[in-house]
Image 1: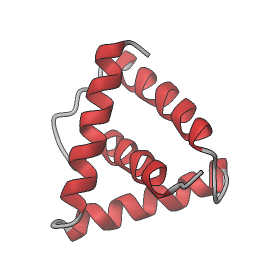
Image 2 (image 1 turned 135 degrees about the vertical axis):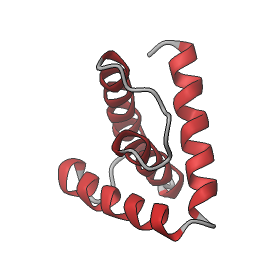
Image 3 (image 1 turned 60 degrees about the vertical axis):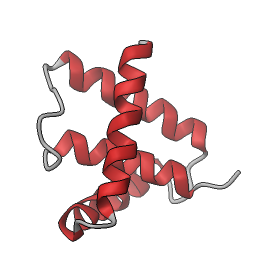
Length: 91
């Protein structure tokens, strides 16, 4: 992932995780994405697995033309979910 894309994804994750504390709808959506991710990549994935997933996901989203215009779109919420999971993983 390019450095610029990495910074953008980090900023999306940081902003989204912060917004979850004041926006119950976003927190609920993130929770649903976390459940789906745990089904796909395991209940307690290693941070490296989460980072690899995030890189592939973000690169694919940007290749498809996605841009973070809304904190409610699927891609934004998925990135926030992965970032939240990374913060919860203590290794």
